[in-house]
Image 1 (cartoon, rainbow, N blue to C red):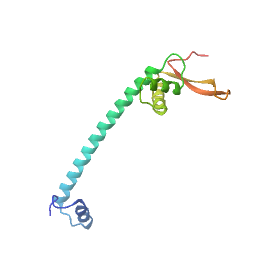
Image 2: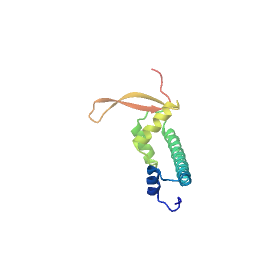
Image 3: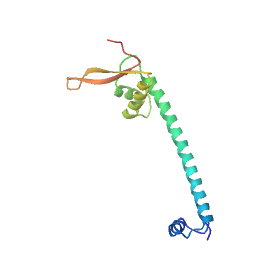
Image 4: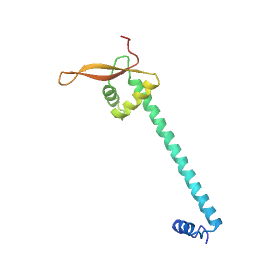
Length: 131
């Protein structure tokens, strides 16, 4: 029997039983390796596309940061109002990347909450004055 006449199940069964001839095993392995190569290439293209989209969003978030301290929620609201499809989580991830790259700064600030009590929040800006 040749590879073109055998199903994968038959090939695996013959392999387990030790009845698979070397030529069929070689053809089957070459076919499977080609499929793996194709799948890996497609995954690489998808990953590059997703990375590029993330880089674009990072620049959009960077454009929303200003000299004035803003919370991640304020930045997200500004981007949503500008028509961007973003979430607080996506914005937070890009803000973390920008802080790690040294492009923006973050600091803690106290603001009045809805209940009138002060709460501490993280704010972002291009830079903060040293106090």
